[in-house]
Image 1 (spheres, rainbow, N blue to C red):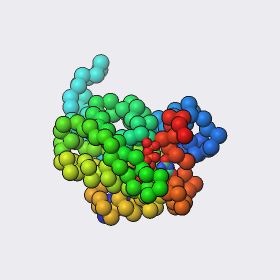
Image 2 (image 1 turned 90 degrees about the vertical axis):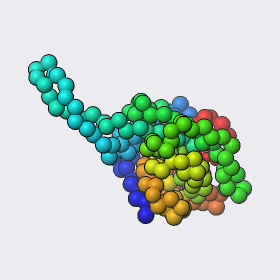
Image 3 (image 1 turned 60 degrees about the vertical axis):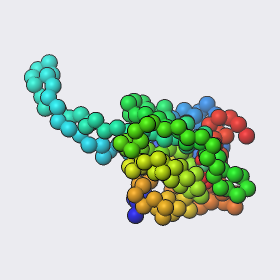
Image 4 (image 1 turned 180 degrees about the horizontal axis):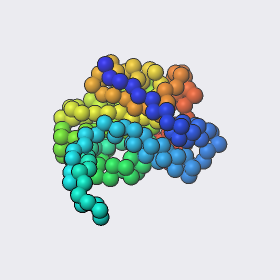
Length: 209
Ligand code: PRP
Ligand code: URA
């Protein structure tokens, strides 16, 4: 069974409060999503393997460590996942970025894939699927199936806020995919929105309605 990590660092929790606040406008919302994504990138990369190297400091030769050439791919789910890309790239600047375009039908809540463009070597990369919201889990589930169909074997999922219903779907469908969250909320409402959540992440990020 995949593991669920709630990254409850005080800075993440603090910023999430302002992200959730309905009085936070687009400019500030965008900046906060960017900052929280960078903080979460710090936590999600804790297990990157290191190798020893030797360098010369101004004082002497020293054996130190560097990340052992691990190849990472970020996979934002369009649209709202785009808001998390720059924050993560600040910490993992060499990562390649693939895009999966999905939208949720507002009536049926089922996702439809409308776009996919991935790095050519996804089977060799550690992939991090990013989306601010994991609600019914339909979008992330489809995106992960799409990646696996194309050869991906090593996938993590990172979301700002999740509902238990979405977590359950991912754990059932993808027991190999660990889930990293800023917060695990109470439930979904009858319209498929996360409660208390933050509303529509894409609309708040891009100022649409
Ligand atoms: C939102 C969100 C997720 C999805 C989550 O996207 O960014 O992708 O809903 O819901 P689910 O877990 O029930 O599938 P939306 O479909 O609204 O598209 P957008 O990012 O283009 O606004
Ligand atoms: N998508 C969102 O943007 N917000 C929710 O609460 C659920 C799905």
